[in-house]
Image (cartoon, rainbow, N blue to C red; front, side, top):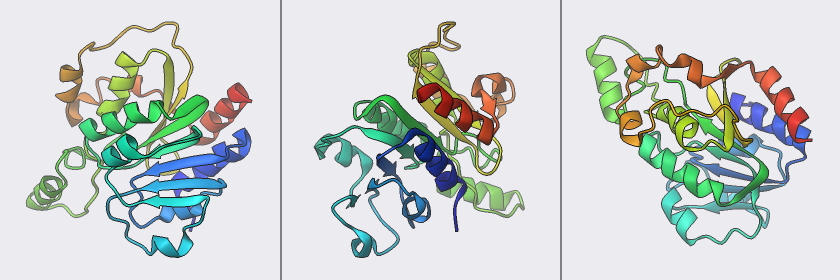
Length: 227
């Protein structure tokens, strides 16, 4: 079954003619296996499927933490699309994002997963605490987005040569980042420490900075800009 992630990735890839793809945080591989880009690399310290059976010269799997991958793997050709869905903490995602910038090019697309938590419990950076807290409140569900939402503010404040928008239709919200200078740039917090201390209840106040967009409209807009 096509996931909302693979649907968005394939739509961008088809429109932009993308040939290389990197996915960080693959788990059971539902998204990765459905992506139709010819050259695909997957990174995860614990794959939850028999990846060896589908590995080829063009479809490669790296069974290591993302930090190990970025610091020890030679990337001969920059990736066209990168999907970051690793450990759902601000610190790890920020580190993965910075490393990704070194192995992408001017027309690359970077997709950040889980940038809008579904509730206050989902926004906690500790998955066990998130689930336990929800259970103690008498609620059901195991949703966990972590504090990846802070990445939106980090990109906004510290990467003025990058533009971004957050898809909030057709599935789990994701933030798409591309290389385009923001000419009206002005930091909001100008402090990574301040950003690291944001919580779920701050999101409503700063929601305009999410740059919310309809999925189809944003994808069409990006394809039109980059063709």
